[in-house]
Length: 420
Image 1 (cartoon, rainbow, N blue to C red):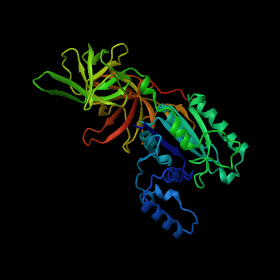
Image 2 (image 1 turned 120 degrees about the vertical axis):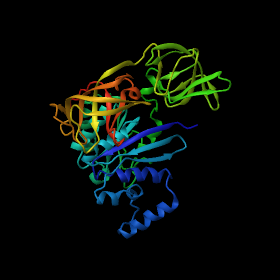
Image 3 (image 1 turned 180 degrees about the vertical axis):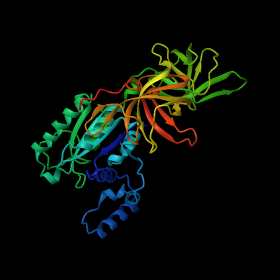
Image 4 (image 1 turned 90 degrees about the vertical axis):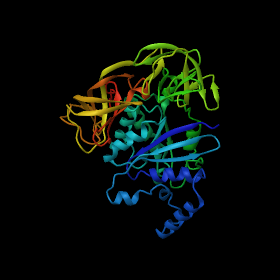
């Protein structure tokens, strides 16, 4: 069974992101023949001599021209080595919220820059959001290298500039890889380019195929929200079904049930195909426990040696997604894992200025796309971790009670120190 890499793409408008994604799909033979023929016909109609691969992914162009909000587009492809889920996020400044959505589950992000312009304001904005969301690995894809004559010095200067930015945002040097590419002609995307003999690193696809897929959730303590309580037989079987959100679980492990605080041990880890000796993050399982404990949907099973804290007072960072501003005192719903509870918004904290990549004074209200600190008080205590430690139990959503619409994405913990 091939493993799976979830990654996101980000970049400024006109940096060639659609062409790069189209090139990946085209060169990995992940596009149907009739789609290719349609692109070829459209390219000829535009007077082009080569296929415009951006047309493979620009199906939302009509919506963009009408001013309709562009959402994240998820694309799926595979190679003999690995399967991929690509979250293609919009490049427009006003769609910061979409970048947050696309990058929230990513194990890697590909950030594009134009070789002619280098690191620009939108690059800094996207890098700050990716750092805030704790995306563990970055690829800086310097695109359109053919338009600067494959100038080694210019491209290396861009890479050095971005490395300084990434370092200031908390990315380790070995977490950032710079790859010079031309999506239009295919340089270093899937095939190595003869125009860059000075570059000895991987192609973009080669890096995506070889980078470790074990994200921070793998090394975190065990966490699993109970989705269903399963009973069958003559009452002898009682299991708790859910997806392992972080860490691993195995028979014999000591766990704690939250909110209740009861401790017990794992009797078995079951699946439809039979019991497992161990299950890791991302695996859906049914956990049976050694003791009969009152457990309901929304409760969390956690490693007894490193449990989350249970609290109704949260310091968090919000990315506000709604066109209706947020003001202190608002009464909303908070969804955390499988549990939903009422919440009151307290004081607003510092706001992230995504142009300067600095935290600035607290605003009176949050507008759409704003990212800021906030204090929250929930009606029911919740088992939470800081997002920096465990993303699964450190993330939450704020919901509008009357409509059920999602208003904000939240990260438990104090704002990340950014020194852009």
